Amino acid sequence: MLAAAFALQWAGEAGWQAAAGWNEATLALTPAAWSAGEYWRLATYGLIHSTTNLFHLGLVLVAVLGPGAALARELGPRLPLGAWVAGQLLGGLCWLGFHRDAGELHFGSTAGAYALLAAYAVRHPDRTYRFLVFFVVPVRFRPRAVLLALLGGEAFFLLIGEVLQRALPFAPAASAHLGGAVAGWLVLRASRPAPPERPAPPPAPQAEPGPAPALDPRAELDRILDKINQTGLGSLTPAERRTLATARDLLSRR
Image 1 (tube, rainbow, N blue to C red):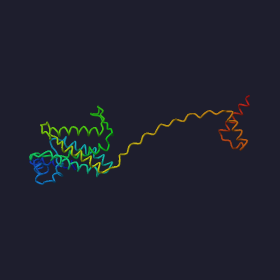
Image 2 (cartoon, helix red, strand yellow):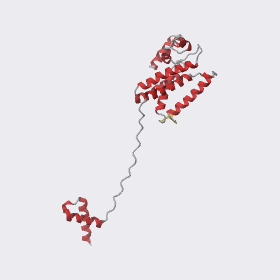
Image 3 (cartoon, rainbow, N blue to C red):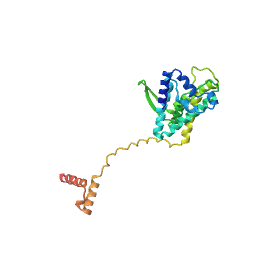
Image 4 (cartoon, rainbow, N blue to C red):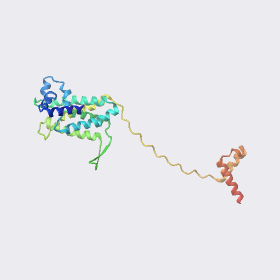
């Protein structure tokens, strides 16, 4: 859906230069629109993204196709969808809480992406992933470490850019991102899914059977002779017959 909405947005802006301004004025989240009662923008601001910075949409799609798809396969589509929606709603409200200037605006669905990442990282904190950067450099990471690193960076940007309002090289919507992460965690906790299955431990190696203990030939022969006396020659097993034949041969050679 996001890719389709972006394709429509890109085609509209390519054919009509004023489309970008119309999208932002009609769909984006702004303090002025919120004050005017246009609360429905909480549901539309995530449908538009920057057409000049494809990295913005790329990160969102990675979250959807990665943690989002994994959660859907494991728990069904309702939980990741709920986390996404809750992330967008809470992220938008958090952004409005830190931005009051009428000229400011916010759009994109990064808050929903943070919600999916947070839900997955909380459910599988220690699952290890490995891949090769440029097919050469091995990299290993865990979802919990990635989430904590991102949240630490977002907290820094929130403090410097949105609380202290200092100039930054770029202006990430840290309040929206942090709100989205909190929403993802809350949705996962509220749903109370069954704990993930852990792989069964490998079976303990079994000791190879050693050679059978050596029998005393004389004692074994006495046992066989006692068996013949009690049950007859026909009750002997093939192994016992061979033992008896071997003893007979040894006696005949003496």
